[in-house]
Image (cartoon, rainbow, N blue to C red; front, top):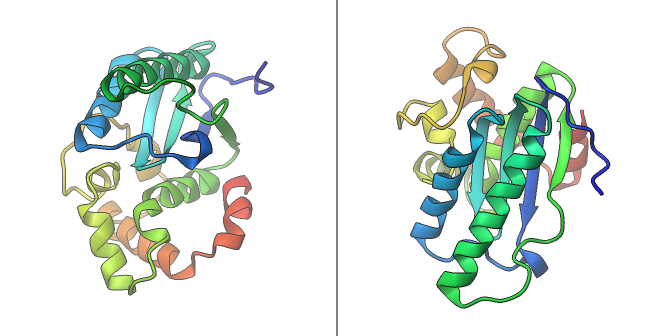
Length: 196
């Protein structure tokens, strides 16, 4: 049984990966299918604040709207995607590595930090120059970052909570925060970042 008692109007960082770190997205259409399911099942259960899908894992920043909303949403999402994946690739067995992980967001500073951490995922493991990392993020299609900096006009995420965390011109300031985060990112500080 899950120990977390998800509370309404609270924010949570939700993440999981493929069993044995195996890829859960093998083709572009797999990402599209997962995003389609995010949109299908979120209604009246959760708000999606931001997301990032990587080949072998995913990150979601969610706000629970109704009782058991996150648990219901994640059950529907992962069961439906696993059925799709198993049928398409003639796969059997467990797709995801156990129950999804969750971290409750306890402050607006943490909320902003988690959004940055989620959005830098496509570039954080690349041993490349900062400029190329920024280009990577701005071109990565399977994240909400493009919506946050107005490269794409997506409607899946509610950006209001993050926008309210930033003073001044949001797009300009958020891009600068992402740049600073990339410059200062240290894998060893990951747990501290997530929990503070």
